[in-house]
Each structure stands twice: as C-alpha cells, then as structure tokens.
Amino acid sequence: MDKQKGRGWFIFWCAAPAFLLFIVFMVIPTFNIFRMSLYKWGGFSARRTFIGLDNFRTLFADMKFLQSFQNTVLLIVVVSVITIALALGYAAVLSRVKFKGQNFFRIVFYIPNILSIVIISAVFSAIYDANNGLLNAILSLFKGEGAEPVYWLGNQSVIIYSLAGAMIWQAVGYYMVMYMASMAAIPESLYESAGLEGANGLTQFFHITLPLIWTNLRTTLTFFIISSINMSFMFVKVMTDGGPDGSTEVFLSYMYKQAYTNSTYGYGMAIGVVIFLFSFALSGIVNLVTRREALEV
Amino acid sequence: MQYHRTKPHASIIASRFLIYAALGILAITILVPLLWVFMASFKQNSEFYGNPWTLPQGLYLQNYADAWTKARMGDFMLNSALTTAMALGMLLIFALPASYVLSRFRFRLRKLMNISFMGGLFINVNYIVVPIFLMLVAGDKQLRAWGANPFFLNNLFVLALVYAATALPFTIYLLSGYFATLPIAYEEAAYIDGATYLTTMVRVMFPLALPAIITVILFNFLSFWNEYIIAMTLLSSYSGPKTLPVGLMYLTKAQNARSEFGQMYAGLVLVMLPTLILYMLVQRKLTQGMALGGLKG
Image (tube, rainbow over all chains, first blue to last red; front, side, top):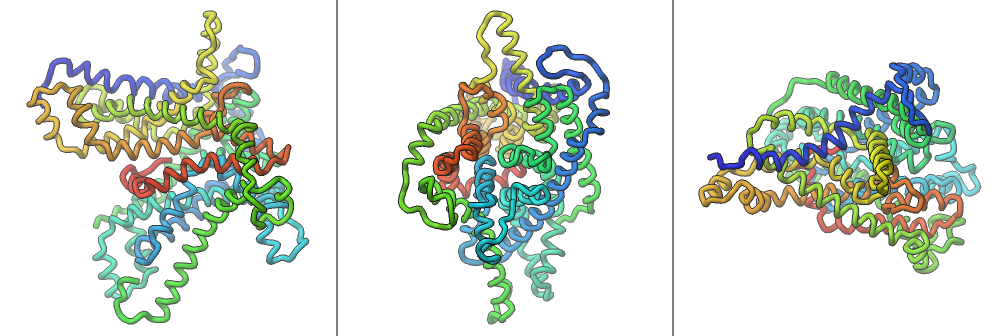
C-alpha cells in the first residue's frame, strides 16, 4: 500500500477512541478489583485503609462465602455436563439425519437464547410456584389430587437444582447451534465410508464426529465456565436473591451483595479477585485435562 | 436415515421414531412455558388461583393497559429503545474504524491493542460492574465538589456508553476478522483513483463489511435490550429512569407482594415480543452469524 500523507493521524483517530473507551471501562475496573481488595473500605465512611491480604483471611473463614463457592461449583458441574451432553446429542441428530421440519426444530431450540434472563427467571418462578405452578400441576396428574406440593423454590436442598434446570433450559439451544456449525465442516465422505464399513450412528458419533469437533468443544468448555458463573448470578438475582438462607448464593451474587448492597467495597472486591482467579484457574485446568492430539481432516 | 438406501428396516423406523420423540420433547419444553405466559397475560387476577392449565375466560386486555401505564412499562420501553439505539450507534462509531485499521494497517501499538481486545473477550461485564459503578460515583462526587450537577449515574447516555465500551472486544474481534477476509485490491483501486484513507474506509470498505455489521448489530441489540445487571446498578435512583428488564424485575418482585399476576405476565410479553419478532425475521442470519463469529460467553 503506498503511503499517503497523514497516515499516522488516520490510524490514531480510528483506533485511539475505541482503545481509550476499552481502557476506561474494562481495563481500569478490572485492575481496580485487584487493587481495592487490599483495602478496608466500607459503608459510609470514605476512609480507605490498606490492610494487605486481611480481606482474604476473613473471606476463607466466611461460611457464607464457602457456601457460595460450593453452590457455584455444583452449578458449573451439573449445568455444563447436562447442557453439553444434550447439545451434542441434539446437534448430532439435527446435522446428521435429514428429515422434515429440521429447520423448525433449529429455530425453536434457539429461542431461549434471545430472551432476557429476567423473563426466563420470571417464567421459571411461575413454573416452580408450589401452589399455582405448572410443574406441580403436571406432577399432580401422576400423584393424584391433593398430594403434598414440592417446594421447588422453598426447599433448601431442591432449589439449587431448580436453578440448574432453568439454566440448562436457557443454554442448550445456543450450544447446539454452535456444535452444529462445527459438525457441518466434517466431510460427508467420512460418514459414507464408515457407513459402508457397517458402523452405526452411535459408533460414527464417537469415532468421527466427537474427535473432529474436539477443538471446538474444548473452546466452548472454557467459555462455559465463565458464562456459568455469570449466568448463575443473573438467575439468582431475579429468582431467589440467594435465599432461602444462602442456599442459592453464588460467587457473583455474594460479591454483589457485599460490594453493592452492603457497601463493603474492599471485601466485595476480594471476592471478585477470587472469582477471577478461580475462573481462570479452572479454565486452565479444563484446557489441560482435555488436551488431545489435534485431528486434521 | 439417508445412508441406508435399501428398504427401511424396523430398527430404522424405531430409531426415527425415537429421534422425533426426543426432538418433540425438547421443543415442547421450550414452547409450552412461553405459550403459557402469553395465555396467562390475558387472565384476570381471580383466574390465577386454581388449575394453571385452564384457558383464560376472555381476552382481559386491561392487564396490558395496567402494565403499560400503572407499572410504567411504556416509559421503560421508550428508555430501553433509546439506550439500545444510542449504545448501538456509539458501538459502531467506535468499533468500525478501529477494527478496520487493526486488521489492515501495521503500526506500533497494533499488536498490543489486538492482544488487549482479545483479553477483553474473557472479562465478563458482570465481574466488573461494581468498580464501574464506583468510578461513576467518584465522578459524580467530583462534579458536586465543583458545584455542577451529578451526571454519571441514573443517566441513560452513560449506561449506553458503558454498554458500547464493554461490547467492544467481541465486536472488534468479529469485525476485524471479517475485514481481514476482504481482498486488498478494493483499496488499491480506490487509492489509484485518488481516494484518501478516510474516503476509502467509509465509502468502500464499510459497505463491503455489511454482512458482518448486520451480525454485530443483531447480537448486540439482543444483549443490550435484555441486559439488566448493569442497568440495575447504574440506574439505582428510585425516581430515575429505568430500562424494561429492570422495570420488569421490580414488577415481578412487587407481584409477589401484591398478587397482580396479570400485570406481570403482560409485562413479560411486552419485553419478550420485540426480541421474538426480530428473531422470527432474522433467525437464519442469527444462527449463521454464530458460525461466523464463533463464541460469545
């Protein structure tokens, strides 16, 4: 490309505004999470005192935090295993088997992804309602009228799975479409020759489809971790607000409660640091564990 | 199944039946709750006690009127539309030139910028919402100290700016990926005709990138329209402006206390409808765009 006058200024005016905005609203806040976690800064006094790692010491003795840790891990595992299994299964069927109405199913399965989490949470709150909800109405068909209702959002040991159900409902279609896209890149000839050798659909899935989309699957796993941490917060915020008695408190909802609702900023930011480190560490571990020789077609 | 061209065996018919059953179950699980919400939005309050499966006795449109005026959903919808439009506009103004120069020009900070924006893909906005809030609080405090009116909180424009800024990494990733696929011959021809860098970019390259721009608009429209964690945090004043999802969230909470179910379901439909209509119009584009852009966490 031959150079014109003012090339440098052109580049500057194109790139600098976006980069500045990115620095101000993403880089500095991220940096601030780490910095503020070292301060005692709370409530209505503007005084900040440097206390080193004290916030973290308090944090690991905080039973409520440990419970939110446990809930987050439980949700990540349950939601990702079930979602990925369902998404892979449905993607394999929709991209391998040709039949009428394929497009209809693809359209319908993606719908939850375009709805606000507020809507999904509100809908599921109504579905899970103990007295007038859909789910208990369906169950009472089997159990008979007058059976004791299940308190989907009231029972402390059930509620976390109710939450997981809503999260899976939301995520399956999205991951399905994504896996369908990478399955579409697998050449038809592989399946044809496998079919001639007598391999059935299931064998083909495990020996052709899965190995060939493995790279893509790994990437989605990493994103899945970050997104589950985030999604669990968004659902909790509307559906349960962490209750009853902390049984659905997750990482981000606890951070938000401490840092925003209680205005204990320093302590809240220490939780933020743990979330950052945890999600990166977990992504790294998952990445390592799932490493395989890359297969090329 | 297509790779068996001989007479259909019983096993194939059985497997086909199983596939349809599996697809049908998922489709029903997704559609029934949504249809139920539409149905419930036409019910009178007294109809909500009892069997949730009963059809509404009539079209009780008063729910929509109540949601629109009493619950201020009309105002909120206007706010949401404004915020989304401003955020999309700013996003394109900042992201388009930046993506273009980042993919086409070699300059000193290019590598640093590319790496930073890539890293930004891994920072979830909800992780950093509290530091952003604190930064804006500090800004307002400074303005008050100077005797000016607070500006940063409870301001739809600032909210839109935060949306645009935090959407930059994904948008630039997608757009610069697309610019990189366009042949350089277009620009060379324009330069030979004496066009400046700016004219070439705006008149030649932006129109060529239209497919990617549309994808970007679609994805970001959905995420801005549906977003509520940042909106809830930055629009915290009781009397200040609110967006539709935030208003809906307060409505669902109030609904529990005051039992105005009809109004709440009407509100849900009002938030859902624009995204559903948009989705029906562009669903092919959206799911293809996912294959193009890959992941969004």
